[in-house]
Amino acid sequence: MGRGKIVIRRIDNSTNRQVTFSKRRGGLLKKAKELSILCDAEVGLVVFSSTGRLHEFSSTSMKAVIDRYTKAKEEQPGVNATSEIKLWQREAASLRQQLHDLQESHKQLMGEELSGLGVRDLQGLENRLEMSLRSIKARKDNLLRSEIEELHRKGSLIHQENTELCRRLNIMSQQKMELSIKLQSFEAGGATDPNKSSSTPYSFRIVQDENIPANLELSQAEQNEQAHCKTGAPALGLQLS
Image (cartoon, rainbow, N blue to C red; front, side, top):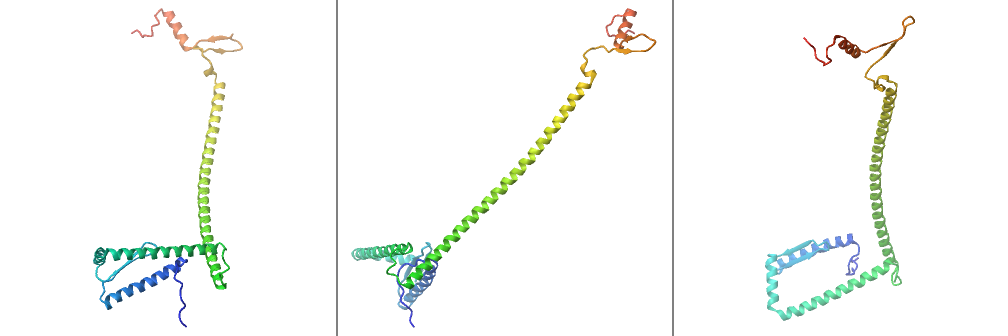
């Protein structure tokens, strides 16, 4: 049983498109090499993939092939101009066809213009939609998972900051309580100390006895002053030898 005919149009599935590109690129390079060997032709092949990667083959030197091609175009301006016009016309027609195919594919994915499709085509369209839906769900799940992890990380940081603030608040409350206790002790001690509240430079002591009348006892400074008065020495604060 022979292989079925393949419709020459852009492959929508990126994986299948890449596999097909790799296979056909290898075959194209092989044919170019065989052509250069069997026919003694100077062949230069340049291919850019959809991702921008360069693939090339030259039977001699790529620079020599390009220089020969440029020189040949300069020698035949009329023929080259006509060929270039036809080339651009074919390229424009190919691009228009690709645009038409993309528009039809988009309408079919949106559920429009399905009357001309058979069961197999509808099954393929359904499979494409399911694959797209799985890809969308996987992407959405990844984004949600990343956002949840980021929220957990931020919540952990906020919890650590809250714990640190509570610890500092407890330390400040304890320091405030200690200062309040010290202040109360200081005020209580100042109120009960009789020596701190008296501003009189002389100290008097009352001596009470049942048989002796109450007398005032002078302090040491007053006794020294009375002694100086009795001796008649001037109270200059100096000791005479």
